[in-house]
Length: 240
Image 1: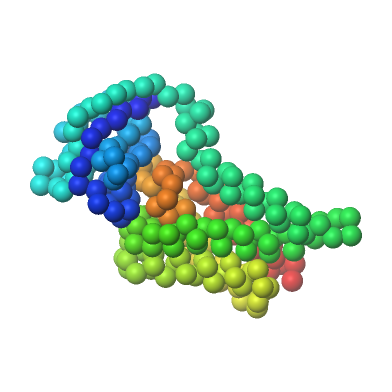
Image 2 (image 1 turned 60 degrees about the vertical axis):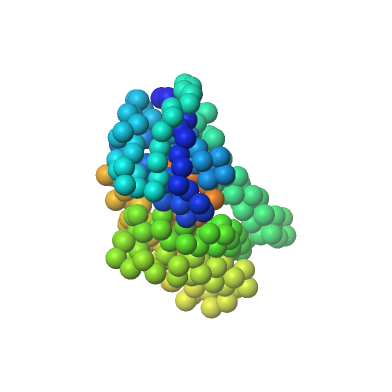
């Protein structure tokens, strides 16, 4: 694996950064992309060297407002370190949510499974919706790259972020648990369809689970994340 750094002009907002990352991650040999509108630069990890002209075509060609040029530097990156670095945000979030859920659900010398799952779901949805709402437009654009509904109806990405927020609040307050778990089961099942399709087709696109704040490539990690939520909502329905 190699990492190249380029000058990339034309980015003016977070939405531009998200759009550029999504376009570049479509290329088969690209494994990760980091961009900065402040520095007008892009750092691209790839399995083998890609010509600058091909990167420009992925951005929309010479007529695009995004112009990539000036190969700056190259470095070899260790695969294991890259994986840990890439997924560090989501691993930390799951770790913190799990820790808080264990503490809250510890009652009379044992863990209350129902309470643990409810607090975990509340923490998951509140945290993930927070990152999506930081740049709602950029999230919706990234989500439309793979979600089966958002690809046809762009507004679904905007709605989805608020659905997660409402689910998080509902789990935290234990409001209408049966209805909330059914909604969670249905929403997450629909969401995982596009994720599985993208992973099976080996599409190199950005996962929008944490909005446009972090550059998380679509992978089996995303499938596991969605599967955990589906499993927990199903388990809570069965235990009610």
